[in-house]
Image (cartoon, rainbow, N blue to C red; front, side, top):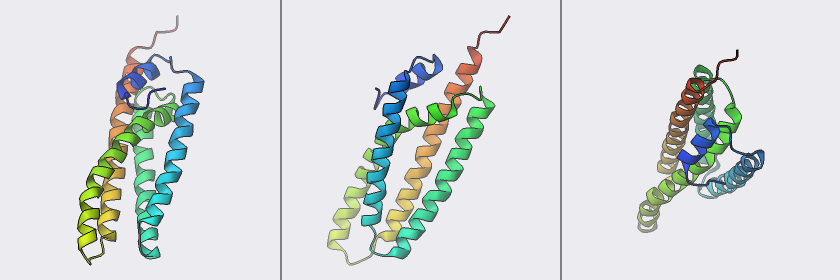
Length: 156
């Protein structure tokens, strides 16, 4: 299983050499991490209004991101969309979480010494990280779908 190496996952998806068990492990770990992420987000806001605003923004960005990735895959070889989404999402998710931690630490320190409410900052940061996630994922899907399309053997 490849938690960090996007290039290796991409290569194995192009060559159809990623086993079903590896795909299942990626999907399982991704869903467990998403549950913890959702619980963390709900706990990080002071007001229910901000929770619902953040959820609405995340749903919108996620929907548009999935549609963007789907259209890119469709323009390529139009195959294995779900497998590509799941397997590529896990290493990109880890990178986004590290970026999230690095951008959250200064705000937590500032928040400790400040009386200001930073909920809007967290909503904006979460939205931008979600957009970055789908753009990054889309770039790899485009690359794989085009390479898979280029390497197809013609049927005789």
